[in-house]
Image (cartoon, rainbow, N blue to C red; front, side, top):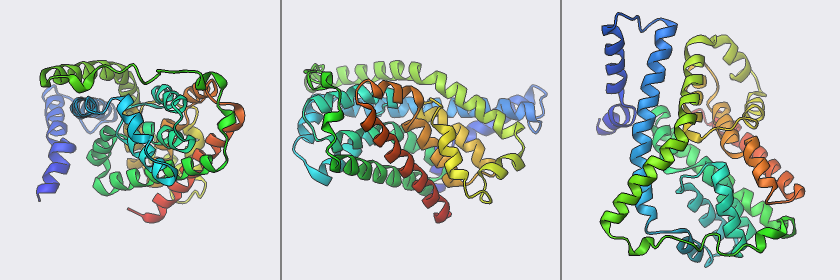
Length: 332
């Protein structure tokens, strides 16, 4: 009963949904109509995501003051092989970076001489998984789905990095990357911060990160509101439902050209699932948007050569599609 309360009232914020409904009804609006239902979805999801995100950014930023990039680099440098890839994937999972902002960190780790597999495991997991997305997934889809998403995402990152490492494609990294020094060495002296300075830094990170992420949240929630209240359920079911064996592949291919933060993608996934899309199909769409967006691939091309970029896209796309079918088979 305690977990049900946490799931519905703390993470899911059912009280907020009820409050928005009461406010709209007090204005004489019919919350059961499509238009007002869309307004309700937009207000509720935007406020809920914003509250959860700000709390998580603050907590993660505070913790990160104890683990600046230079310290993380030294820790990662102690490992090799599959252990290194696991560490890279886990580090990516606890950092709140989107695909584009992960690339400079990837460059720093690569120029520092860390194993290629480890750096790619980081690059795969960082935009796909982070503490904020885990909490949001739990608030919308429940703990089982959220944990399964994280486990399968980390598995994809570790296996992807391991496969790329085995190909020995270091020569496909652009030369200028190896000549960059100090990319992640110019750390603020986090470790000498007082508690007051750590709190102040965390508050600044909330303001800076939220201002960047907010447009994606608004767009994602807006699209989700339209899908939730206007797109016919039969249409979604026909394309992304269980009767279409190619739904996972379609969702992955559709997600690649889209650029959105994970926090802007989750409301779209929520609306698609409510309309009858298969869970694995929705998860594949989310993973493709966050890991293989066209803008991030353009940025990554400046860092790695076409051969390695093609391998990276192939590995991620194949893993995402397989993950989607696993989700569908699990029937959570």
